[in-house]
Image (tube, rainbow over the protein chains, first blue to last red):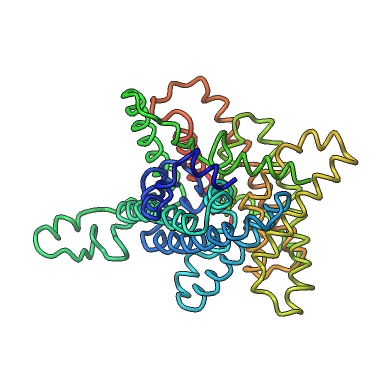
Length: 257
Length: 194
């Protein structure tokens, strides 16, 4: 199954580590292009540092669970693979949770319940189902790294944007508004900025994401007008129609009982 | 009397003030995905209410009587997600066998619920907030009611919005997100109830 798929869909050269990382970062960026895993994207992007931690934690889980699933997929019977995948993913999430609790307690408090909730992040399950269960260990591992870094970059950028507009800080350094670190006349000008609090509140998350998707829609339309292939673009939200991981998952769960 | 007051506080807090979707961002996928029509939205809400209430009871019991005595509390994430997956399958089978009409109404939403982060989120929050079993069940029920309220309202707005002239790029998901953002602002008004 694996050899056949590799040649048919991508070609052997396409599964090299570099290609996988590039694919995750840009071509199939999970947040911006595929539009999956929206819950953590909205919830933890109140600041850039939260975004980066969440992103790296997800990358860790994604890379290792992809590797282990690629290793085990021939042993696991098809009918019980959903629970088996979930156990693998949940184990790595527990590892991350314990590590964060031990070494970064303040970040762990800030991210709270969203760290254990990495288990139900559609990106991880989607990649396990769509990629790792059909490919060898090394490409799967790098697919996880690429997808994870793509997710990290996207949510860090969203976090940075919300943080700058909403509280005038970037990575907790005051840039805009009162008490800015920028000296001189420029600093004086920047200190006149009034933070728009709504951007760090819950409603801001919805607005920022709405503008982001609208921008992506615009790009997609322009690409379609030039006759380029836009079939890779997602439609937003993981439970809406034809998306990477979800319909497959639902179908298999129905098969399982 | 004191416990009843506590339970009422949990009920109001979890359903309105800390609304699960609009202020905690849990269960966003069905919120955005299954909110095109009011009746399907209501079906999803009811299915979720059923599963969350049941799962917070079962997860609470297992946490208290199995994980804590065995000193295995750190395994909570793995255990909870498996319990939820099992429970959803089980509920689906029972409904299929004994309550066909209810199964027909809720059946399509059940497989979606396993991966709904609200279900696991409530189970984990119950542990994090040190709720006892009854408080946990009330919290689960209230959270699900909060979800139902917000998804039905959103579906109602989306039905009306169908005829509106939305800018080209904002068609589809973006305008729904803007609506959700405005609803989130409206729901912050409930924080005065505290």
